[in-house]
Amino acid sequence: MRALVRSWNRYWFGPINRMHAVAFRTATGALLLYFALSLIPDLFFLFGSDALTPSRRRFRTLYWTMFDVWDGDAAAVTYLLALIVASIGMVVGVLPRLSTIVAAIVFVSFERANSLVSGGVDDVLRLWSMYLLFAAAFGGADHLSGRIWRSDDLRTQTSEAWLIRIMQLQLALIYVTSVGWKLRGWPWREGSAVATALSIEGFRWTYVPGWFENSELLIAVSTYGVLTIEALLAPLILFPRTRKLGIILGVMLHLAFGYFLALGLFVPAMLAGYVAIWPYRSTDVQDSETSGAHSQVTSVNLEPSVTGRT
Image (cartoon, rainbow, N blue to C red; front, top):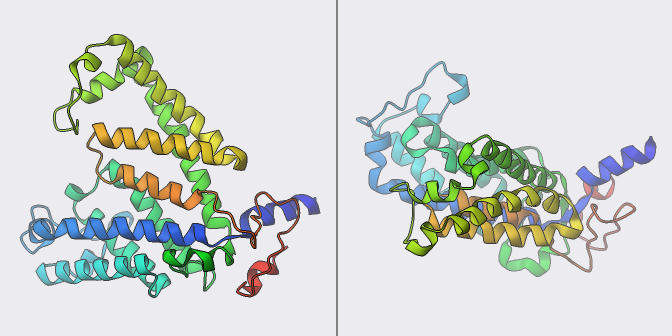
C-alpha cells in the first residue's frame, strides 16, 4: 500500500521539467492576446452600453462575469485593456501568476457575457485558461515562472507535475469523447461525414478539388481515417514511450482540420495543449513519470515542496 501511495504521489506531485508549464502558459497567453485584439473592431457592438445582447446576467451564478459588477462602454474598454496587458504578461513572463489569473477571469467574462463570441470551438481555450488559473492560484510560487526564450535555464528547473498530468488526461478525454459522439451520427458510421462537413457553406475554409469531393472512396477513407487517428491518440498520449508519436499525429490531424475548415481558435488551442505535454528532456531533470524511484535533481533552483514530497 505504501508503494502504491508513493507511486501516486510521484506521478501527480513529483518534479517535472518546468519547460512544460512555461511553454503552456506562453502559448495560451498568445491565444488570449489574439482573442483580445480580435474584439477591438466590435467591442461596443458586443459589450458596450447599447450592445446587441445584454451583458448582465444577474443571479445566474454559473454564468457570472465581471460585467455583472460593472458594465457599459467604459467597463468594456477597461476589461479589454486588462486582458491585453495580462496576456502579454503571460507571454513574456512578467508577474506570471497575477497575469494568468487576470487573463483567465477576464477572458471567461467576455466569452460568457455575450454568446456571439463564444462557441464550442472556444471551449478548449476556456479549459486551458481555467487550468492555468488553478495552477497560478494554488501551485507553488514558481510553478509558472520562467521565460520561454531562456529554455536552457528552464530545463534545469522543476515544478510539480499535476498540471501536466491533468493536461494529458484532458487531451485523451477529448479524443475519447469525440470518437464516441461521432459514432452516434450516421454520416460517420457510413463514411460520408467529411463530405458533409466540406459541403457546408461558411464552414469550409479553402478550396477542395472536385476529384476529392466526388470520390466516395476518398471521402470514406478520410472519414474512417479521422476516427481511427482520434481513437489512437488517447492511448498514444497517455503512455510516455508513444507520446511523441501521438503528438505528431495529432498535430498533422489538426493542421488538416484548420486548413480545410473554419474552426476558430480550436486548432491553435489544441496545439497549445500539445505544447504542454511535449516530452522535453534535460540531463539535469528526470521526469517523475518515467523514473522508477523518486527523481534526483541536481539544480540549485528547486523548491523545497517539490524535493521533499514522498
